[in-house]
Length: 440
Image (tube, rainbow, N blue to C red; front, top):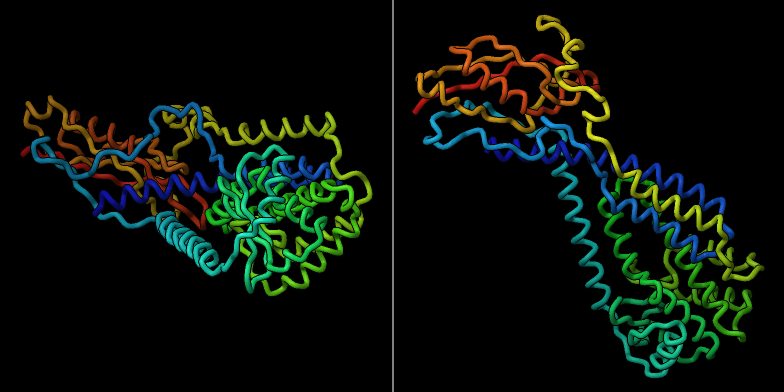
């Protein structure tokens, strides 16, 4: 059981460090991205949508560590209890779950619950739909799709007892419309179909799935929720722009705006889901879209300037480079030998409120010389654990022989800890460690 707890503590410790660093990098990038989006808010909506997706891509790229320093364990080490034919065994003190392990398990269970809940809600919603295939709508949808270079076959269906407009499916898209759509004028129907086909053209459904997964994994980060709202807003805006410019007899902003208001009134009680593209979405964002449509006077599909391209390239490069992080030893530029001068004396008193916890413990190799001489016994060490949880120094307190002492020190320096804390801050402390060398 100890081996499993140590493994879990190790995974949780690395997870917490990785998550903290990732959230800091992602939140900082999202903040920078929001500033640029605010400055460029009246530019081409498709450009702004692609720019906002860089935040989503950043969330999907974890921190990348380079030039890992030697001596830092790269994986969980061997178990603490060994087979008898190895010629020795190591004492295994009781190990408790670390705080980071408790947080990790709680996060894992909550994520699993949210993913199951999301999946069940999607399946339940789709099963609740009573739809009828609409030949005319399908023909008009495919006719419009061909104009935009979409070769996938699109189906149009009308919903009974539900007033919703959304698209589902990436490979075989289906556009769902209310039953009332059969009585819409041709220009109104074409505008709505063009809006939904814009989602299909840009593979918005795939990105919505990615958004849902990222928001589930990082539900505790407000920046992720803000980013998702901004992405959804620009997604609908670029589809509105395409719908407004699709037909000469339906390019009046006021007409499309009035039509959206009419749809909104009838969709107040509708139940849309985030896993499908929806004409409605969040009502607050819908009102922002309506405001955008009411004040927008210039041509919708603006050309992208060289300056905007430069911003896009710079932020794209920053997405990757911001994820590259030097290893802890490279950042400090020191080794354990170089930091000996900063280690306090062994008899110094260092106050701490939380003791260090073992993350990975390396078992010592029984030296061949010790086996031949039939040396055995207990080696007691006093080790200094740094703020980073690394063993910087090991001093023998009691040992039957120098050969066993060297083997114990070598193993101790490969052991990693969750550092001691004093009032929530990590501190370096001296700590006792024992190894049993027993011939069988």
